Length: 407
Ligand SMILES: *Cc1c(COP(=O)(O)O)cnc(C)c1O
Image (cartoon, rainbow, N blue to C red; front, top):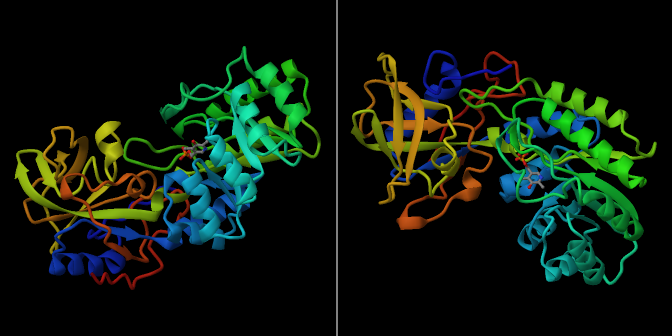
């Protein structure tokens, strides 16, 4: 299931040596993002074909218009947006897309513009105040799908989303009954937290949904299991996604909802993690610490702030024979916080001037870059080789070999 392709190693010499030589020969001074449209397309098709309901893309994970177009071309028709800027972005990039405004706390002006200008009909909420806001902003619209967000546990996830949003057990009954009065279609949604490492996360959340439906005794038309579908990182290899889908399907089938009710999900990370990687240069080595030219304020926010480990590969020609050892990284800014503990496994003879590919940065990597302290780069190159890890392929060798990087 998880196939690792070393960037310059023997595992896939056809696809990556060309890229490695090119990178090493051209010696880019700024970090370079490599994007892999085929990997995002494959992930999208996987969800469209195998999730037992509708898959909508959570735009915040990576709002790149190129990526939005790839997902659209691969069959993703619905988009989970959380701000008016995301509404405008998707509406202008994909005029045919259906937008669902799934942030439970919105500005009234944003709701009004989404409804009247961009045709948005699906909104989430977790309070009576938000329900009132939606009614006022849409001038009492009668064609709304309203999804009540329940607070559920993030116990199985690497990044919690359990505190900020969601109606708790004491609040959901009143809210579901009130939303039912207003909504054309009533939904229930939740988010189990990002990078959920077990399908149990969804089974447990669905029990909370069941209790809320029974307590409120309302007819529910949509069950939206949110995001949280994992990708694969060092030390965080999840079970196959099919297991998640089967668990969700089983739980959905046993809920007391109408026969015609729909099942939705909102994957962010799982659709785009494999879409991009980053090539960085080592500017200095101090023992087991490497000073690289991207970091906490660039595409490596999660590596710095939540200790996320990403797969790494030395790009050197000829390849190093040294054994691997554990390194940490410092980013380029003048700030102690710009530190990524890792550990990142790289050959012991790595030195200043070497290039490293950091993989699986398509989700919450490029989306969070800043230009703080004058660092950062928009340089992007489209490549056709396999991502360093994939949940969506069991292919031994990449099929595409013409991976020439022109900078
Ligand atoms: C962030 C978010 C998602 C996507 O979460 P992933 O863990 O990236 O799949 C989906 N829905 C909502 C409401 C979110 O806030």
